Image (cartoon, rainbow, N blue to C red; front, side):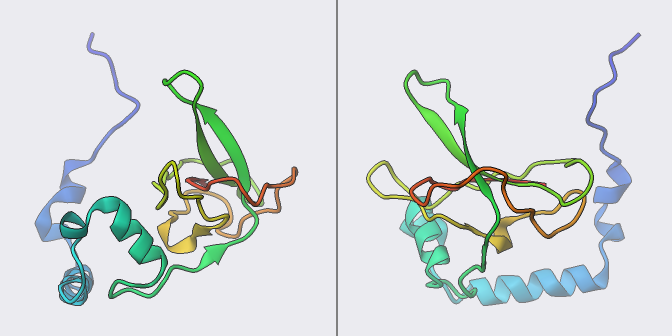
Length: 146
């Protein structure tokens, strides 16, 4: 008997004929807007993330969300941890996570807020709850979102 994966993808959902005209139009407009700006592969991903955060790309600077809790996850590298920022739904349990690579380097401190435009709400309310423990203003902010 074959093993059943926890991940199931309905192939018909990915069929191009099932993409709405509204989605096609949105994507075409987004491509047109982004053609006027710098390309991440020309300036480098890290610099592009910083430019995006500062509003130096064709898109407006992202709005920052309050109410996240900074946490540290263990890394495979000894003596290192991965900074994260958690947003929990007001009610219910989270059904997914979304990780954002922040525009930081070992010598550049991360921002204390995470761009709202980078989140995908998966469950519960899209409005984050207030953290139960205080957050540190110096903590970096990759994101785990509900």
